[in-house]
Each structure stands twice: as C-alpha cells, then as structure tokens.
Length: 318
Ligand SMILES: [Zn+2]
Image (tube, rainbow, N blue to C red; front, side, top):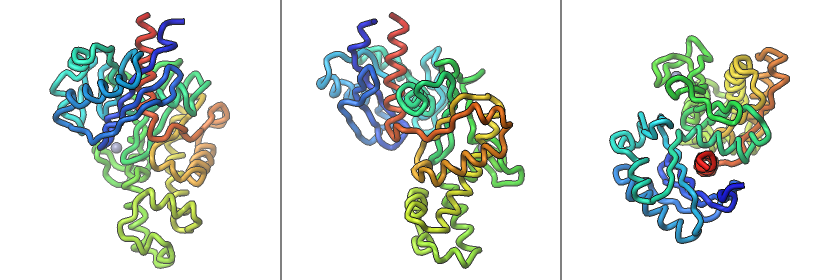
C-alpha cells in the first residue's frame, strides 16, 4: 500500500462554462468544491488560484487531474485541439501548472475522464471492459479495455456520436449525414420535436406546444410527468441511441455499456427503449453478454474521473 491511500487529489472539469473543481479522496469521494466561470484566456492563473484555495482545505494533495474539452495527447501531455479552450493548445498548460503548483498534473479528454470516473467508482464498477456514451449538447464516447482508456491510433477512439444511423439524414457538423448526433443530441431532440409539433396538429395537446423555447431538459421533465408527445419523442430518441448501441455491442462484445449526460435525465423512459432496440438489433450472443446501465455520477463524473486518473498515474510511478 502506497502513501496514496491516504492522499487526496484535486479533480478539475473544464468542459462547461464553469470551472468545476473539487478535492477527491483516494476512494473517489468529493470533499470541498469550487465553481467559477471559466476564464478561457487566463486559465493557468485561474487553475493555480483554485488549486491553492483547495489546498488550504486539505494538506495531503497528491496530484491534480484536469478534464479538457478537446483532444489530449497523454504521452506528450499536450492539448492537440480544443474548440472551446484554444489557449490550452497554444500554451503548455501541463508544464505551466506543474511549475506553478509543484504537483503532478494529468490532463485527459473530458469524455474519457468521465468514463474513467464511472468505471472506477460509478456504474462501471466491477467490470473489466466498458464503453461509455455521454449524450448532451453533443454525443461522445470512450472505451476502457482491461482497466485502461483505449484511445486509438490518434486519440479519437469511441466517437459513437458519428456512427451513421440514417444514410439520408441531416447533415452533421462532422461533414457526414445522418450521424447519431444529428438525431439524439439535446439540440437535435428539440429540433425534431419542433418539426413534429409544426406538422402534426394532434401533438398540440402537448404542454411543449405552449412553450416556444423548450429544452431537452423540459422534454424529459414533461415526459416523466406523463405528457404523451414528450414520451413518444424520448422513446424514439432512445431507439436511435439503441441502434448505435447495437453497433457498439456487435463490434466490441463488451461487458458493460454506461450511458451518461443530460439527455439521460429522462431515466427509464429513455433507457428502456435503448435496451429494447439494442436487443432487437444486436447479434444475440453479444447482447446477452452486455449490461447496459445509466451512469450514476451525474455532472461530477469528469471531476471525479480526472482525480482518479491523477491518483492512478501517481500510484504507477510509485
Ligand atoms: Zn457526425
């Protein structure tokens, strides 16, 4: 047993508009939290400040893990691309933070960090291999094989949001048409619902018809309160996701699939059609070996996962 058993770690999630930071114990429990709007052009100073602030609350911080909304090369510790935080590509966040804090720093892609959190202490616990899908503003994925993130030849493995679901579907931001993301991400669920409301007069009975600016969260809430139209749209969304999940199952024969992100807030109303559709479409022996579960760490997944990556990286070094 190394000294890390008693150490705490700092996990930081930079994937949203807010910087979410927390101290995380060696067994994955969150202690102190800090949240503040991300200062995109002054990140090093901001992260240094948050770390120093959190260190006042815990004397035994072992390392820092940071979830980045972009592509991270874990060998060189450089951010290769990031649409939301371009400053992390221009500068050397990793080297500057190590220098400023004197602590070991681990950077990881945000979906990978969230996957690792679920794998270590969430819905993936106990599995050897896991596929993680996060469905929110976009759709991301991550593959964990034998305890390790498997990121592929150039870091993009697990891009399940860009599996083609409908060859004649809408154009995706990736350039393809009919990707899973074009029907099942939060903005696209809202788009589909609006299109349907416009052409189908019976759906005007839905509460959503009276709210011009409804969101995917509103749809999930109305569905859970029994709104037929919202329930139908959520169910159809689940079927699209289940179609993608079936491909993942056939390809990987993977032990566990964990689904997280804001769209999963609809709970069983979306999870059940996902499982049903995957069952219908996947190769049966593969499907039978797979457990499909909702994520359990919510919006803390990336923060906790980044801290667990920092924990395990410092453990490996001894
Ligand atoms: Zn795409």
